[in-house]
Length: 424
Image (cartoon, rainbow, N blue to C red; front, side):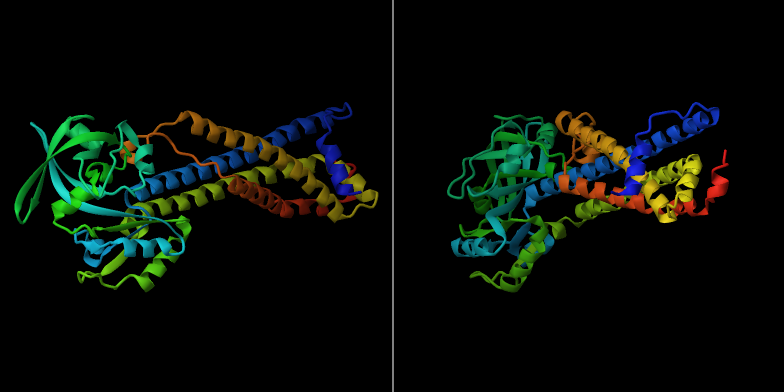
């Protein structure tokens, strides 16, 4: 039988207010608010940590997935085009596509071709970037952000003269789905006009992409650039695990980069982090905010527990004296109060988990807290419920909270049995 645990459980479950003496009642009136404050401190601290981590994870992954939706994980293209965004072609025939698909860790390969142009209505015009894609293009991201119309059936064999544009572009040009719009492309041969039908409208709230990006057929973009059917701006590679992007990039660097195609162009590759360093650096800074919040909340929980434990020890001075008089060692008495603290921390953690996870689920299914998409790129606060991470936070909170109580628990070693039994 664990004697300190037994005593701690009896103390924790003691609902009486004493033996009727006014001194005991007064002591209990002091200690019980302290216990409630300590429990509340742990609960609030844990709830804030859970909400903070879930919000930051949700925000980071939502923004990351939106950026990846426009550019995939890795881009393979012509060396100068990859480094400077200059629309230079690279050979992307069946053999190269099969090789890229065979690389370990690569999940999907899709071709694309870029072409700058001008959209014009009777009263407005706007410079945009046309992204030509083929039938293998993964439209999952576009479907998730589609707000009107439908996704065109893209092809590399013929052009159906249909485009997909953003809500921002549609608002600026005052057009809608089903409208026909002229596009003008400037090249060395002069101005080449095309007339497109707006098949669908998307909205991601990523301003730097929404304000310029339109999607059309790969065939149309190739012809407007004057390229052959096996020439594109490059290929976008999706990997099985985003955390292993650098591993796949290393394989490309060794086996693909610096090689040339049949036209004499040099292959090169670029990860999504390298092509959008500002966004990913900003997202990485959010981790620092989380660590600061975690540290502050652990400090709050720790200090409230220390103050609560000291008050409880002072209240139970008579009991400590009796235990020592009966032969209990200092370590036994210290373990008794540490177990008592564990009960308080456990109750606070239970309340904190219910409160924190409840807030996260409420936001997840109702979108109660809204944001300005022009500033935060999302219309509601995104959350991600990561159970393993929440369990880790709980374990860390328990360990740290108990650890900081070890030093204050040594106060019992200074309590003398003879004096303590006369303590009032």
